[in-house]
Length: 459
Image 1 (cartoon, one colour):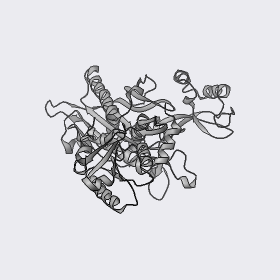
Image 2 (tube, rainbow, N blue to C red; image 1 turned 180 degrees about the vertical axis):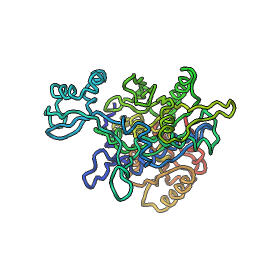
Image 3 (cartoon, rainbow, N blue to C red; image 1 turned 45 degrees about the horizontal axis):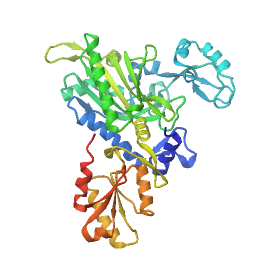
Image 4 (cartoon, rainbow, N blue to C red; image 1 turned 180 degrees about the horizontal axis):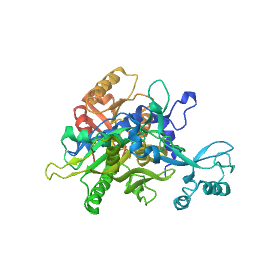
């Protein structure tokens, strides 16, 4: 399996991901997406929007504010329930999640008994940072980031950076339904930032305090029988796999985990986690939850505003139920990098190549002048470069020799490299090299756009 160190090294070397605030020594678990990484991230989000919003008639999008009225988070249960079990080492004062030290069943047996947790920790678990066993009494640690609006601090001016993008879709449900005149079932989609004050973030971009989500709240009629919501749930379970294939995530490394009673989020009647075999272990990648009508019902109670939907055909009135598929953008990027990363031997040399789906690659074409000190070749290459940029996102590369250029573009994941040489000046043909096979062929410059575009269909 590919090591995390290899992914991190490649990410920095080729401009996918940098350590945040690096010139000042960095900021723990803060990451910046570089020139290549931001293109990959953009392509992931664009593909998701194309598949689940533009490609459907039953889902519309919104882009809501990151800061919302604090009552939103009271109604949703996040103020009371959105917490991790935390413990602090008395010696080095590092903090850790208690549940990460014990198997699930063992932790659940003592979940609310903090003195028993402390006893077990002192007997069995040395601090990962300093190896001492002087633990404080564990406590719950709320993950919401409080912020204060205006010049003065105080509870009246306090709200929170959103802990999930979902709540705006619930709060805006009656407005969206009114302006779109959508009949149930229909969904609301959003891509946006969320923030969680994680006790123990880590593993590169897998768990960070600031991250981006792609979420859908899919509203449907109040189920009269279990099989009605189960049918909706199963449909979205299959849609998750359609996404896996489209984005190029290795499904042989994907595992469905049914979350049992007592471990699900406070709003969920059923949850499946889709876990992926990352280099650091099998961890949650995506989630699928049946939230019933918990959120809409609570917002109706807290706000006094009706969340009731009236069926225009039957006249029946009810608060809709919801199935929520959710995707993390950074985790998707990491899983895609892990799935695309390949090392192989070619002519006695190690080659690293990112085999992205062509439509997901940061650059679709790299254009090379064979020699950078031959004005006539460079001029012709710039003409080809300007032409192909009208059709796809391309990059100019004249660094070093051709072999080094191929090497760097393979590591970036560019599907095709186009070289302009002396023969180009004679007959207007170019050499095009395939990233995956490394095979080369000559084609006419006029045929280059159609050649590339024909290989960019979503599969």
